[in-house]
Image 1 (tube, rainbow, N blue to C red):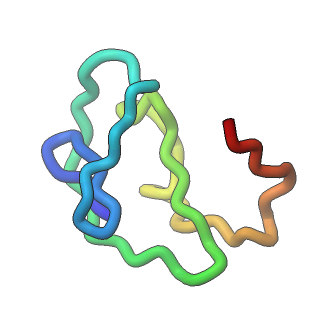
Image 2: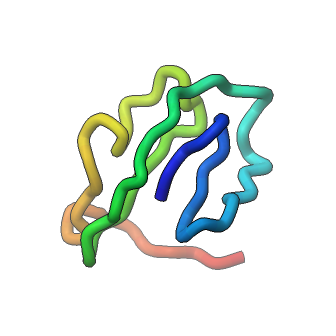
Length: 70
């Protein structure tokens, strides 16, 4: 994954993020390879979020909850 020109790319494909409110200006990041059995978390307020850009990928074993697919 990487961030270029305020856009997130995963495996080279631009991520559609309709949930973001307005234009956000963030520094380019990556490329970053997410280790197996980990996830990369990003806040929706990218300018002030404390997320995987600072703390790294999160082990799946640390996540509590379940996936709900709509």
